[in-house]
Length: 169
Image 1 (cartoon, rainbow, N blue to C red):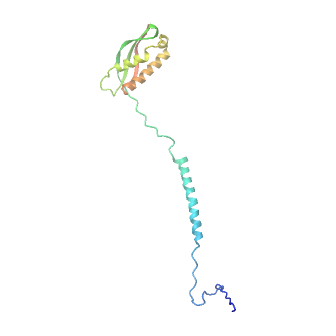
Image 2: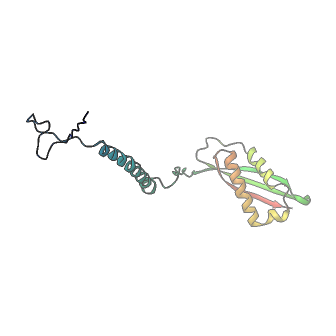
Image 3: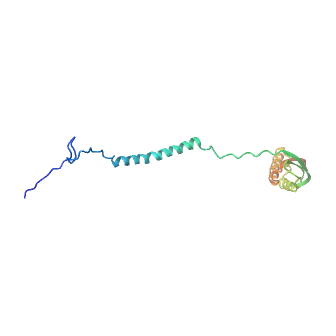
């Protein structure tokens, strides 16, 4: 039996498909590869843009550091509360006669009990040597330390300490 071969070819240039209908041929839709490449491009560019925006914010717009709290207004000086002098034991059998005056703020309604001030002074000055408490620089440091401790102990009602009596023997 003889084998017959047929060759099927596409339309000829300028020819019609199927040889019959006179309808013009429409262009095929864009290839799916073009859509895939567009999606890949978006997936690459989007993270780059986001990183660039984040870097711009970090270097240009972010706050320069922690926000500083508003400074508390400095208290205004009020009355001065005089504390009776006390005798404190020093090293080597010596003693210190210490008198204090507390500078109160204007916020204080009534004079506080000076017992806390005496207690803090005893704890700070007792047991020191005569040379140590006689040195002007050390005396000033001790006074400043006592003022700081009393400011905390009296919760801001005391803003300063004056030494009214300071005798060593």
